[in-house]
Image 1 (cartoon, rainbow, N blue to C red):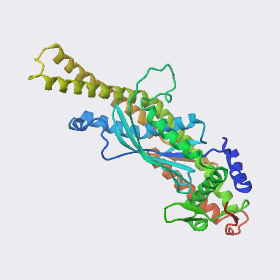
Image 2 (image 1 turned 60 degrees about the horizontal axis):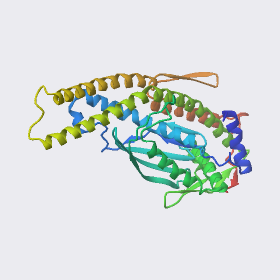
Image 3 (image 1 turned 30 degrees about the horizontal axis):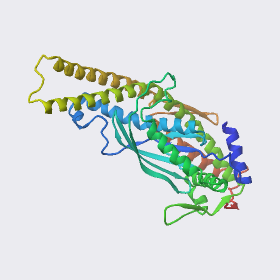
Length: 366
């Protein structure tokens, strides 16, 4: 949806009690790693080069996995705009957080928590599965993943929850998201619009009036925030395209290494001595170790190039001014939000006409 149309739709949603179909927008936070997750195995930590690779893998898959989830949610056709953000949107209609519990070439386990803007829990459970490899002729880097079934199970649960929401419930979620975004900008003006319950959920008490100037300023600030979100989206997609093929290679080699190690252990237990030095199997083991080391080196080089996209400076034009942001995307996003908050404070303190802003009028909550 074009951004200007989005602003009009938000105002119409409050004025008429209508939503854009039955679609909820989804905000996915960059995943975290659980303390127990060890993508390359504990034995790898003793090797500095392998440890560097593990760190690169852990860093990259925190973005790769939610990006693939985003793709699958979009492909389902059941949700609105789906965004992966380095800092989660406090005005999200449906928020998804994920922790990587286990990530190897053959197994993936994710702890997923999804909740709507009213604080109601949709999903809070572990999704795990083993790799299923298949050949595909698709040129779309997003289309295939060996753990697709893990994500399919999550999406089924999210869609099942979505189907339990009627039109009125979806409208409340959308309105609550807008109020929570406003509260993030001006807490004093919006603190009475929602009330938190003892179970942690929220209830809407009332809504800003349709012609409330404060509401229109918040919508305008939200529109400006999407400028940066568009930039984040482009950089994340570029990152995914650069790193995903190498990440898949790392997964495959890691699985092969684990299988080879398992087979070698079984052979050693079955025979009283190791392979004779210079034998075919000893040479094969040596070659496999060499191949693994070279692929590790290749991965580190490739992933290093991919990360240059995330730390590239960003320039954004806003109200005839150009802002240059630097650092990681998370640092840039926090800086951009700080600029928007300052801009909102200036506009609110000095509205057109020189008169102080009136307190927000209200509509009854649905």
